[in-house]
Length: 248
Image (cartoon, rainbow, N blue to C red; front, side, top):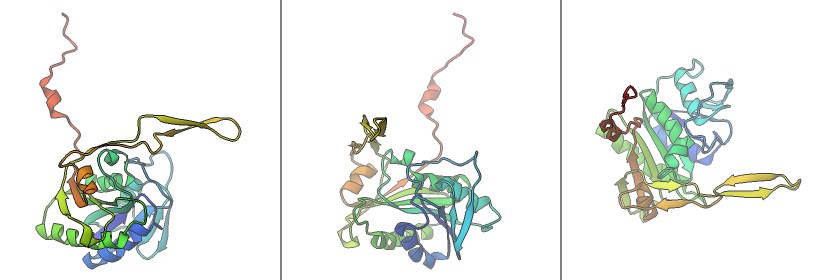
């Protein structure tokens, strides 16, 4: 099995390099990740500027672009020239739950792989204070082993781990996407020259911790697995009939 491993924290990040060690039991692991941190870049791709790719060492490449760029480049470029069977994005330093999914470069990279017809998983760990990457990577490898053995044909998963040792984790839950917003105010300050600058939301995060949601389960010490889809169609709206040629 060839695994494409990427992230949005950059190829030097601890999370991606620790995870690689645990994934090698499944086959060849090739890292293609951003040259620098690209958090919260969602699913953006670089259509209006060139990309530069550097081979750091065997099976590790950096790309001067965004997380989704890395996946697209790895799949389509002759420089890498491998057929991938699985795309894994992570381990992200910080949870990606609720509406984080819309902003997350980690999830965006996994989604790019899935759009190319490759099974994909985004992996994140909650609590940015001393993240237990080794514990997370070890448990993820056990979960991945079970996923592979089920022989599911098509999947796009968002998995979040609490920042706990395995013995303290309460279990694993399949969840639905919760709701989380990045604040409802703009913080305005002035720089030393008197010019205004602005921060969106600051640390003013709001959560809706409903039962069955990824937010609720993670908060209560569970690993969350949220199956995602790329089809945003709201089928409820089809019941409306709007005719612009109506001359009443």
